[in-house]
Length: 114
Image 1 (cartoon, rainbow, N blue to C red):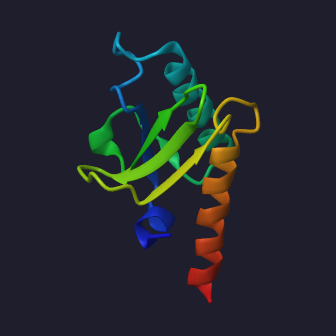
Image 2 (cartoon, rainbow, N blue to C red; image 1 turned 90 degrees about the vertical axis):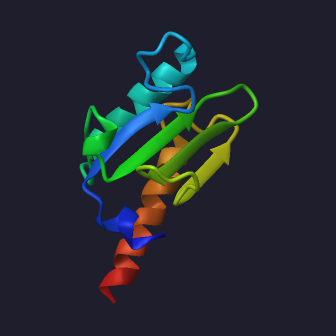
């Protein structure tokens, strides 16, 4: 896990098709944005911001019948710093992809303290 992800404070959540308010964004992706934002607020590691230029990290979500995606980018980068893909990974209340991301960040935090 890159140190940038561990030390970041502000995150923006969006979709691969654009911000959730764009008309071309599918309803399931809009819901995934809301669910991930709620999970981030509950975790309280990061502060969710409303503009990408105010963020240290951009979280991009996609919910599909075959596989969901949660990817973490640095603003302006095209290669993710972290990415998880899993069928149903953003569909249930547990958000397994969010849990995997949180575990990876917390493990990296512990290792950086050693």
